[in-house]
Length: 189
Length: 380
Image (cartoon, rainbow over the protein chains, first blue to last red):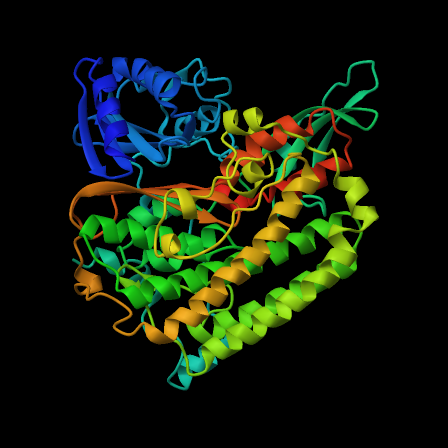
């Protein structure tokens, strides 16, 4: 991205209140905005700066701050640069606006985030389950969901001790560490 | 999908009916399904149904050490695993400010391009099989095996090489390896004419693929299409050239494009890319003997490695399109968040749904294979 375009972009984005722009490298720009200013920002980026490709929407669960961070990565085929727009929304009730009317790829990412984090996107075309159709537990990517604890609570470990393994152990080989210690090795501290 | 969760659907009094296309179907790539509504054999509506390959990688990665995740990431995309390793390693390097030695960067390019050739050959094989041309399938898989032999020799793993680590690559190339790369490339190149005759110019295939799954450039851009599928609509965009990483800005290669945006154009773009990958590999083979030095930067004890807090978004061009990782660290020994954006999360869901509508049921396989959709990338 040339200096000229970078300047032009900075001037353009200054129109939005409460915006913080950080240039991370020649092709990467990080923008932090208040949640209610994001649609205006994306509209500006798409309509006037050529950022027509929504590369991804990422969600990060900051459980200690009681917040979700949503990151919209948009790419410009003209200036060959990527703007990552960061917003924070409250963890409860976890509702935000869909950007589907600006970027059609948002439908997949919003559906995915809804499924994995339980955030509802108002106006998104499809909030049905896609990957976890058989799942009725809590949204699994939330930090408070401990997958290992869930497994211990709902499933039972199967004892696997076939004759060939017993023979191997009797000869002094095979599995030496008991299975429970192998599985929970990270709990020892 | 358990049978007890299905209720028999009352069919309206018409010629419309619903059909489950997949998850076990020769016309579907991997374990994936489409629920299609048909009138006769014309698709009225298609809904993608994923999740059969969901293994919870993103959650698992939050529970593993930074270095352990290297063994997890290649499993996200089975046919083309190397870009996954690289994308994750690049993210960790950016967070730590690690500078990768020059020799490692060149070796990484070699690994990526070998993987791209293997992935494309595999796709051609699968694609040809959907038109009943099994010879091409056998050839594609057999020729891919030669590349897997190379992978086995220089990384130790045939499919999942687990060769990149943050900071560089794991081991030095074996003696005489570059010579064997050249021999394999010569062989693959000599085979391309045969592939052209048997598959790419074969009227059995051309007539099946031409005009199927057509999308315009505007549609492709609006739907988030990337990679060879985007280039088949005439837009010469390639992350390797336009958002360069490793040493791609020092390499000489073309970006093949086609104009029609149909299944045939997409296949041809991949066919031309095969040649470009061979061209890149020849340059790497020529340059590598003169590049000396370490193959990885020193890293802290990987079992007690706290990566500095921060976030980064890395992109590479995989054989299927734009592959991105969004990695967040809170300064701890494990990633706080890893988000994998596979190119197929667009191609296999929205794009496939839209392109299937109006086509005939036998063309769904053409559309899906020509999009080179990789379901494990969608499910993660």
